Length: 58
Image (cartoon, rainbow, N blue to C red; front, side, top):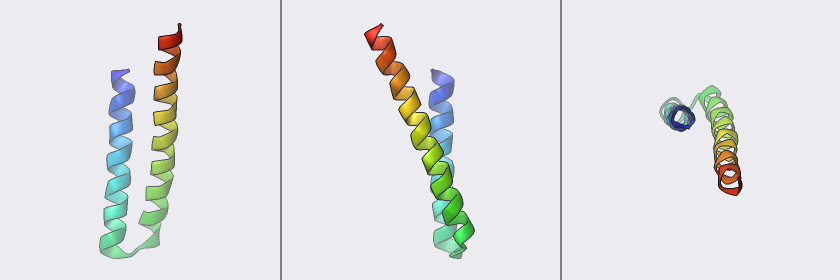
């Protein structure tokens, strides 16, 4: 669980860095990467909370 939390935090930080790079350079490549990383982070968060929910039930 700790590893999954660490990966999730790294994904969110990476997404924030991409959005900041877009704000500085106005290069749309960073905006696309930021959205892609954010989608993966949200999927990982849903998986993480799904695992927590299943642990509570079982």
